[in-house]
Image (cartoon, rainbow, N blue to C red):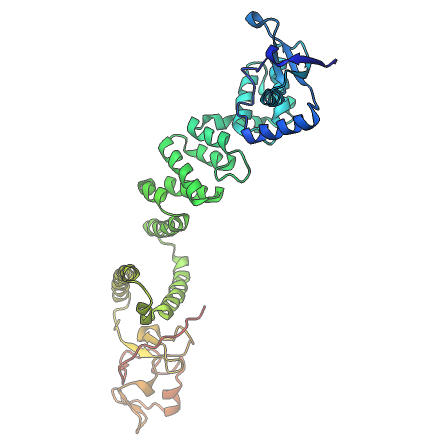
Length: 392
């Protein structure tokens, strides 16, 4: 089609133009280019109707039109096309749709406008995208206007709040107040999409803790979830097959924690941090006391001969209850006559039963030895705790 120079005074922007946001810096760059090299690509217009007959409405090229006005030019190269509303809307959208500087909200609004003229299927074919992409783009218009505006004002890839964040916020569209607070949290803490998913998941799982999740950092949220999750897990029926796994985990973590209990830490912490530390360990102590009480009660119920008697492992020095039978670290038999207060070493016999027990057996008992599960075992010496690394 022929190009003609049209007076800028005879041209009007399209009220339904898909692009609603024109960034000043981008316009200035375009104006500088036009000043240097002229308008390289003519704009497309159509004759205006009604009261504006004789004028022309922009179909494609409003940025070029604005840049020319910014430069104070009188005219601009243009192609005049006789288009109906549907064709004009389609052409305008197609020109802008693939441009990186057209934000996703403008694209969504333009698609919404096209729905007045065509179906989802036809729109997807026209734009060269899937129908799912068309519908997902439209979903963003369900967000509060203030959140849509965040995407309009900050379209750059490096922006703190991006389209991915907005899509995650759609999942709590029924809670606008929380959405708005999360937008501010995203920008303040530079959160990624995964972080927001964690926070929203936490709020859904424990709605009574929503205020805490909205205030604390993501790392604290994860700690809270572990603690709350453990409490919820304890409310469920216990699976017997996990008991031994828990035992191994408790022993391993107890060893790690024990190695960290160095009282010299107080020389290097502030009073505030020392208060925090003491609160943490006291809470742990309360949990352990309650846990130990339940274990003692279970032992008393299961083992009618239960005695809370602690002895040293003769090989590695680990302190164990005599009911353990074997050391949990090195698997050595714990009850041996050589350490029993009832054993007569001179005559190599038990002082209670009078039975003969040779020194070799007294020092290195086997499973068939009399001391293996002897109910009369009595430690000769008081035990002193020995800190050892647990078997992994």
